[in-house]
Image (tube, rainbow, N blue to C red; front, side, top):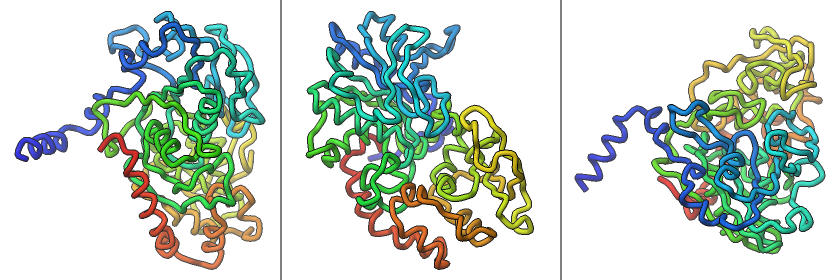
Length: 391
């Protein structure tokens, strides 16, 4: 017991940033997965975040997983790309076309748009699938939906799948309403809260364990765990997981501000502070003294309220959240001149329930709304516990 307490105290005393730097990502543990790939035709499900950190004295400190596998003489034959594409530059919701990777010449198959699940034809002659994508821990961030469909395709076609684990930057809490089955969509596929508190490998484990796949089938799953990680560790992503999540602040605020995507309020798209500011021409400028004008930029060619002055809040200096903030959404609704047009149909898909919009419209406070989530979160916490691989 004494040794355990000493270790715990030493861990608390160590700078958190230093602790997170000591994390060994699943993809770095090549000894765990390269033997599984010998003599196999391999397909990689990945994007710009699928990189391996090299030695700090290397000229290029990062190498893409695909390049690393090819240099190790692994027979990579195909790449599958999620929303935003293989290089991660496409707008949210933009149709990604099939193509060819300019660096390697490998064919790229899009898993966004009409083709969300690899077909039997696309998996023909594939012996092993590798999934390595950095997630941010929310139900409506579509990489976990892509994971679902890839696992389902692997199960249906008897192809084993290897999931490389990476930290969840929002893995220190769970929060939000539980998805109601009638509101299932690509931005909400499972009966989980908005913030799920699992790493991508833990999530894959839950997809199998809770039989989320069609007809309860299960994928032949190999998880490449991290070392020196726990859910309380802060983790700044070295590469943007998508064009509109540029830094740790945006990723931390994303579970709270993404609700605005289902309203007539802009959540910072078309600025350099995506998901760190929000505003609308319809918000009362006497209440909201911050303003900005959305412009076309990478990842937001046609942002909401393009070229119009938007009044709202600048949250770039916000303290780190450990729960969803509903106050900003409620305040915006209460101070808009366009209440009838404030919510759109996408809001229910994001919330996973019609109740949240109804609760805001009748004037419930944030705490009153949160109380209605309590039972669902307690039930989910018990489910989550079964699949945790780290503290």
